[in-house]
Length: 278
Image 1 (cartoon, helix red, strand yellow):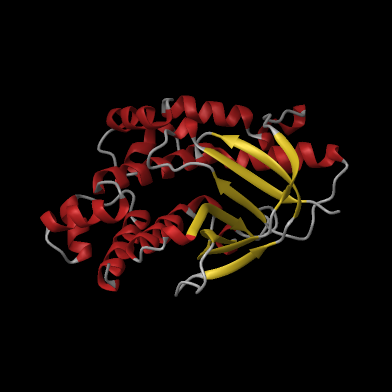
Image 2 (tube, helix red, strand yellow):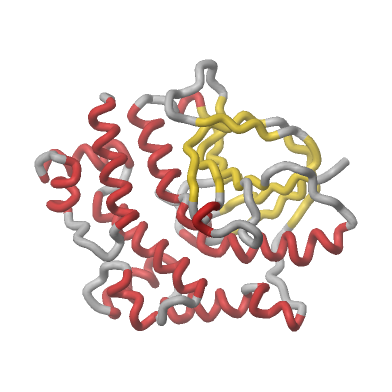
């Protein structure tokens, strides 16, 4: 597919992520793409595998889920913040997507967030194993900013792969995270959204990260991506101090075992890999 269409798609995806509470109607997105409404709808679905309405709903609800876990906005006021006309329609959409009402989702998240229960020594429990992992060559797009916003780079990465027919040369989707959120301001966090590269010539506009082979602590997390922060806190705050292991000087990375486009939020499976010394 031509670079012209790829640029249109990337521009629209960026617009959706930047304006969750704005006008994200099909007409407005077609205007952003500089195409007719009728043709743009078909192009978008052909290049992403979902309709414009499905993409908008997914982005808005993911934004809401992260804000609810951060406790920054009251659930009753969340609807307008992510572009819904009223709390009732937002609540129905959120419950259909996450299996819980916004208030239930926030309550469950707050109950298990280690930072809020650390005084009592409580941590969420996840399966963790130590295993040998192979070296991986990752190709992807650089992301600077809060880790929970990396999704827009994964969408851009997927769009490029689909438009250039690169998927046959890629393996599993991988996110690489270079900084500690406890030490680096959210706006300066560095990460990479991509996948394991098995081709020869590196794709243009993508960056390469080589992940070393070795011993890794691998935590298996099942559920919405918005809850991954809880798993990291359990890995670093509970498991690592009690394991007798020391982390190696290498970035953490996540391996996606399935795809959010054809998997329910509760069934998403992500492996968090922490390199160990020795």
